[in-house]
Image (cartoon, rainbow, N blue to C red):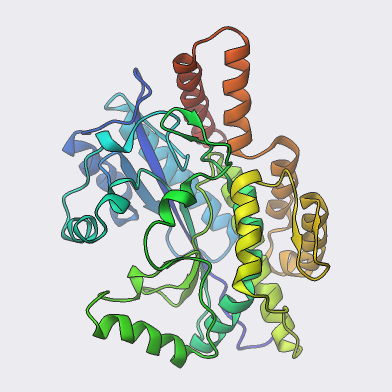
Length: 379
């Protein structure tokens, strides 16, 4: 599309919960040697998180989806192997099926101490994990323009990623309960809309000058200009239990961004809708995943999700070909046919209960499935 086309490089971050393989509960106080071993294997690509029962990995800057897939698989394998040495296992799920946030210990770091002090109970409840995808967009103005347009598609991405149906041992009735916890923090949710990079910076500066935030990394919108890299960072998604789903969603995401850029080169753009309407679709994705459809905002009616995805995949087919990720995009159809992690967790629980297992044992069985699915297709 031209010499000024964005790099569309990729960086993917995944957060995992660490569980005791015997009790299946979240580990409250993992040995300090675990992080040291993980860092020895992964270097700076593995970090601690707010809670000691969490661990985060991040890929290198990847030129394409295949590089991202390879790096994610390597990092997952390393975390699994290190955790196994201590009788633990990571699960790529955005909530634990039964362990309580009240039992967790937070990691002792200045940043986390400050966050917990400022946010109090809202921060202490953050026994949740997410998946963040960075796409290289080198131009500041372009990042803001694409953020404004990309917001439309955030509910679609969430619907395909749901992995948090349980909280404190109960079926919440939501496929993504995680966001009900995260939304209690300030500066979360659907991003604001800005006319320019300068306008965005002015608003960030107001919060900085007032002493409320140190920098823009304390803005936790579902989609934001990264405060550390020249990227647009999508944060709405639950962490995907299956690596193939992570890869498929990452491919879809970068193709949507390239499609929006391609429209811009033709003096076209995606129609902007009010945050109110996008939030309505966001709620539907949290509640139902893709089971009950989303609002097609152009038509003003709820449309089956499969129809929306068929149209979207057609729209980005040129971009999938250009970015070399046609195969990975096809993974979206696999998610639609077998369901998200949330669907699988709920099915497993219901099957165990139907066979006579107790609620407690059924939830432990769900954890066993999460352990297996987190490691699937890695070796």
